[in-house]
Length: 199
Image 1 (cartoon, rainbow, N blue to C red):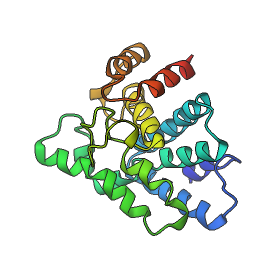
Image 2 (image 1 turned 30 degrees about the horizontal axis):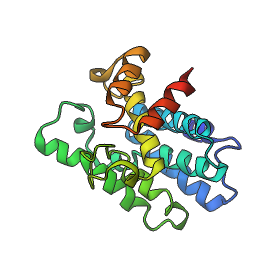
Image 3 (image 1 turned 30 degrees about the vertical axis):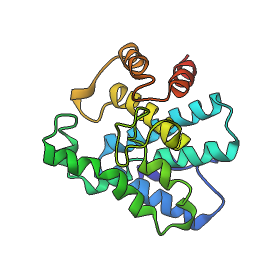
Image 4 (image 1 turned 180 degrees about the vertical axis):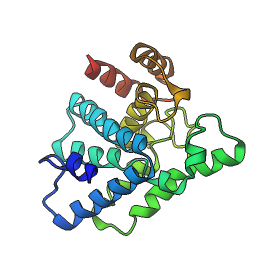
């Protein structure tokens, strides 16, 4: 029940009790799957809100991005823990399984009417600004804005609060990585807004 305690608060509730219950249940599944992954989901949502606010996006869009960020890795429920523990050192077969989490997560939400606007952000959060990402190799502004924001903050949090020891870097190293990949992997405007939001 730790999850329910963490999820409570005015920012979580949409006013739709059934929808809130569904989201709480999905978050609980993530927590059962992997406590680090659950923490990562919370952190990515917090960072994503900071970036969206810095970019002065409308309140409704900030809320859409926040919820999508919370659920961006819901597809990891389909990935064996043994594979997750090896990221980023995966075999070709394991990488195929891992990469499918974007589509798997989107598929899990397809029948939830309130999640339709969040699905593109979840499905495309591993696309790259230069078109070399997955699953669709979208490029530049063809990648939904919410997905571009989640992509940046997801990458950062993987280094700062890693799910495995292979990823650990300092804040300064992670910021440097983002700056180096700005314009290739990531939207330069979002990288700039995120770094400014970090202070």
